[in-house]
Length: 161
Image 1 (spheres, rainbow, N blue to C red):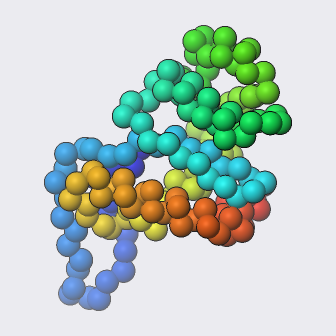
Image 2 (image 1 turned 90 degrees about the horizontal axis):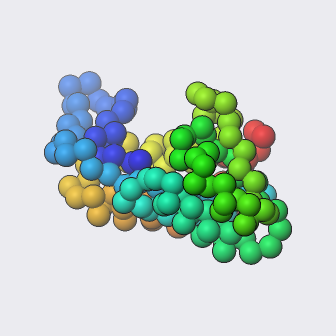
């Protein structure tokens, strides 16, 4: 979730010229689901209003459609919606999709976490977005721009593995 109130981070400024960043504190934002193909560097993100098992299954179906052939292994955090019983029939029906759950509290093992950090650094940090639509546009612009340079995505996010 990219929230409107997550925007303030450490920054540099001239002594006596502190930057003031307004906020409206409505706790709104953009909920994202994403996949990072570590072989090609392609990023696919979908925005959702809620985040539950049914939304997750629809996202998985989009990923299956995006990659219509071959095996797919997705590395996921240990969120409850990633391993509910409701997923079992879907995963049996789509056996070429394998979900690998990371141990709790291990975000450094998941490459997509580096993408979320990069997105926040480049687009969100220390910027005031007066409406959620502006956050949405900035996020979509970022994803679109990095997908034009997959070698940078691979160098920044995938080489460490």
